[in-house]
Image (cartoon, rainbow, N blue to C red; front, side, top):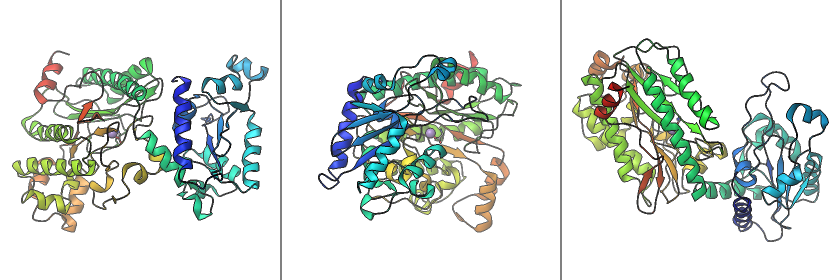
Length: 481
Ligand code: GLY
Ligand code: MN
């Protein structure tokens, strides 16, 4: 938790940004519903608790069962929760009072949970606007629906409060995004910490990658690092010799020399900030010439994004420059043929990189995507492409100092996609299907991911050290492990 001044300042800023968009004296109330315990089956056997990210950002309390209300017209801020009784203390031990928790984050008032329901009902009965964020977990969806009287479907949709219907508040969503997108110094410190743990996780994975070892064992060792040094993983670990499956969560393969192992894994610090790194390593410690050729193109793409990322440039343009660099490299291997810019326009890069170059990162590894992917990742004058690859770009915005984004180009050979495009005639004349079918169907995939902070005049890689990335460097370090 940060100092209480951080939360007081954030809430004042939020109230100011929101009120500026709303009629004076009739701004309404903002409600925040923190996460509750989620039982795996019976009550008491819960999944590991993780607080709702915006609740954490504005109210700091990292415990289940809390809610909060900001009255934009009176300025009141109230934390709601229930003090423990002896029945709880026997199982949980003594807990700080709700009043002391509210004081620790600078909220002026506290009350029991039942008072929250009453406060929302009163606001509604007075015809006041109740602003809320789109809920993602089912508990929060149902709780928000019951408090606001609208359907569970509607509480997940975002619309302007001026449309008169009850939805998540577009004005609130925009104000929250505008704040959380630009990271504060204290947040950057936390992300640097998460990257430090991520570095150790990937080092452990690389050292554990030995012929005959089961992928699952590597996952276990790597996740042990982040559990012992931070909160845990920032997303479900992706680790597979079938890196062509973008989010491969199957870890039953046995490490085989000659294959490539793709490891996409991140840590969450104890204060819940994320890291997200990907490395692809040769299972026998040495890249084959064919692997190295493709690998070097992905390294060049990663470096290019780092070189281009700076304030004023859109990340969409960086994605497109990376697509051009990738196609140029693939052309040198005779995998594609033709004019690079023509291929970029035709969306040929999507065959090899069917995802975007990166996403925002912060308290969530895909920061705030629960608030709306396009609202988070696109400026108002940008529209999302329908092309494969570019259409999956989650962060397209014009970059600003304080943005934290991932730089994660990849090249994948997806047999089903190759077959589909060939059958449909997509990329005909550009893609050398004969070569792909003869030489690359069992190649797998390569992704290389670093985390970037946009600075005043460029960017810096987060974390104290960059994970080994150049092919010689990776082989060198693996030969000594
Ligand atoms: N690291 C997983 C992702 O970015 O989707
Ligand atoms: Mn990522």
